[in-house]
Image 1 (cartoon, rainbow, N blue to C red):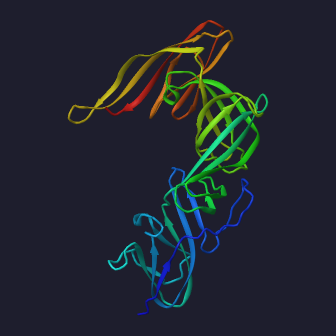
Image 2 (image 1 turned 135 degrees about the vertical axis):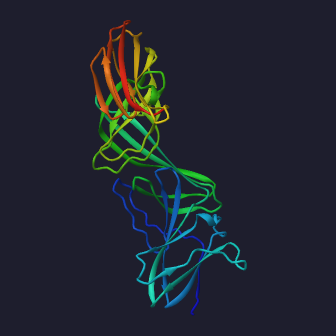
Image 3 (image 1 turned 90 degrees about the vertical axis):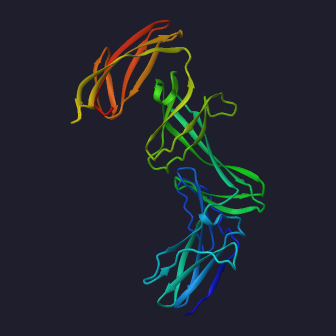
Amino acid sequence: MLRIAIVVTALVFVCTLQAVALELSTPLSQGAEQLICMPSGAMHAIRSMQVDLPAGETELAFDYAAEGLDAASVRLIPVSPPSGMVISARHQRPDAAGRLFWAVNVPRTTTAHFRVWYVPKGIGVRPTYSLHRAGEARAELRMSVTTSNGGKEPLEGLLVRLASGLSYQASVPAGSEATQELFVLRDLPLSTSVIYDEAAYGKQPMAIWTVQCPSRAQPLVSGPIGVFDGAAPGSALLGRATLPFTPAGAEAELPVRPVPEYQVTGGLLESVQQNARTDVYGKLALSDTLDSYECTFFNRSADPMELVFRVHAEGDWTIERSSADYSRVDATTAEWRVAAGPAQATTLTYSILKRSIIP
């Protein structure tokens, strides 16, 4: 059987410089390498290549040691494989240290396209944002990205694709990093509020900025964000937060800073078990629980207080009693709008019935 060794040699970055925009998408040419940033923060690199295969068996080899890679991270993936193609499991040979091999069998001569996936070493990508107030209910969002090169060779024209689908090109000298601005989104709808959400932000009211990602834009990947009082240079930094992954058209809620002028005390008063049900052995199997709460809100400022009080519960639950109107936001969340005058306090009482709890 015919056996031909084809060795994939040193990685070559072949990319065409293009202006970065929200809808940028650059197709890979033969031999191009692309860095993919996953939503989890993990990174993978892809090398695309084209190989002329004769009928029979051909051995493909990848010199992972020369690239400083871990063998376990390397994958060979056929792109639109021809009918009858069979690829063996990757393997190594004692007489070829530092290389991975695949046996590829095709019934007839063909040109095949492959992608080599692997985890790169020494390359880092850090997206960062800044959000600037631009009017009473508008904001401007700027995104930058820092590409770091911890290797011994410079990166020239490396194409990087973020988890949102946005692509950019970077050239970074060895042992350094480079930062570039990718885009600016202007005239975004902005709302501000104060929210007490112990599960999300701890036992303190937080000043929240809520901004909406445009429906026609690409999603926003997660990253640190600075929030500023204006768009002009020298505008005051109000706080820092983490922008979560935000799909197009969705809202991002940013906890900018604590609000020490507002104080919330109290909590659970009592928890009463109801409707206990036992199994065939007489042991408790299911029960309902009625939890009663009382919270007091103090406004220590010279201005009126408006605060959103938010609670969460899992499973089958309802608000049984409440001293004020509330709204059920979703399956796990309820909210109250709490108000108090300057230097005044107000109290909220409510009960949550949780059904069919398994001990």
